[in-house]
Length: 320
Image (cartoon, rainbow, N blue to C red):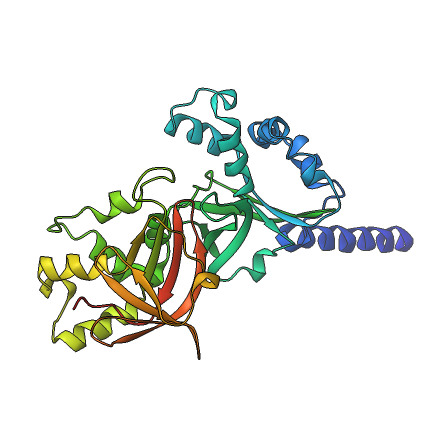
């Protein structure tokens, strides 16, 4: 009897240890590849077919490490319906491939290591042939991607990387996508969407590549930059700035017809914004100088969208 009780106690201890491991998503482990795991899951039949159709399943079946944000069947059905498609076969293959690549990051990104900020996907922007950025926001371990998709299960580890399940197909980002998603650009979004503006900046900046005035280079002031501007102007809020001044100010933050990366900037380079000329310099750190000799530092560069690029600045550019 004593021997039986000892064996029973040992079994209970082992069972409890296994149960604890299964409750911790950090310990979800699969010996399959990313493609193998997707192919074997009934929750990813749409994704599996899309990967096969675009030949990306072979990429995710190799030895190179990737992180895949995997949309569920429900997420894919919503994507098809919202974009006027009945089946995956109706989605243009180039678009489908770009959408899928926008869900893949190089190397392994553990759920616990996700921090708020911009990351690079393996999708290339046609505006620059550099990787598309993706904005990931992490608040109290709740993770959203480009402001719309959310990770619902993290850290399914496979032999060549990590899979995180997402509840929506992650949208291909325009420059407006990042203005909406990045909580550090809230004041810029408020300014761009003010109801009395006589220019629809959101519609303009949503213009797809191939149509004028895309692509864009956008210099995006931080929230603190806008608060500093209010102090400088003696205003209480953005609504205190008259419409012509706000419209002109916002125009000075956009260059049309070009996707200027940080490597394209040089000293004393004149940039012709939609509002007028400003001057870029790179010696001692990248800066912009407006017609009032006010200097803005460029503090984040090359946030790449499908229709342009964003550089974040620490001071609002003002018209002459």
